[in-house]
Length: 140
Image 1: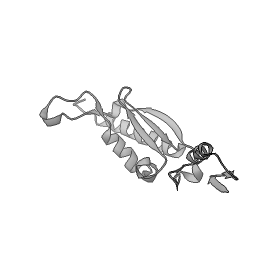
Image 2: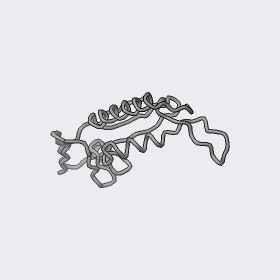
Image 3: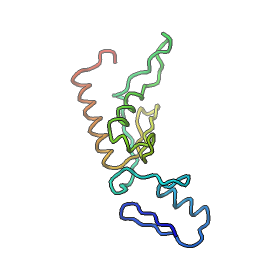
Image 4: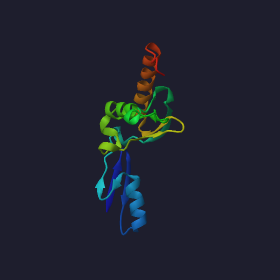
């Protein structure tokens, strides 16, 4: 018998299970490669996928070896700020369930996180925008 508890939800598997069904159930409850991945959200909060337009907060990539500037935006400073300051233990880079991915074409971030972390991201992006308005970057 296998019991999987996630917040108030409990999944009980008994008897012989087909491998495909077992893998699907285990992956759905953050069990992978024979190790449980513990969700860092309170009581196993569900993960929500949201897109954040951040083009106004990005800078262009620095030119390599004194060459011409790259056309794509530089997401690295913003990504580093988010994953290092907003619940750092909750991101996939350190074994948490949350993920953040940049999308160059739309200059946005796709974030899979708990509602609590999303609220903190919205606040942080709002504060960054206020700072840009108060001290505009002349190079932009």
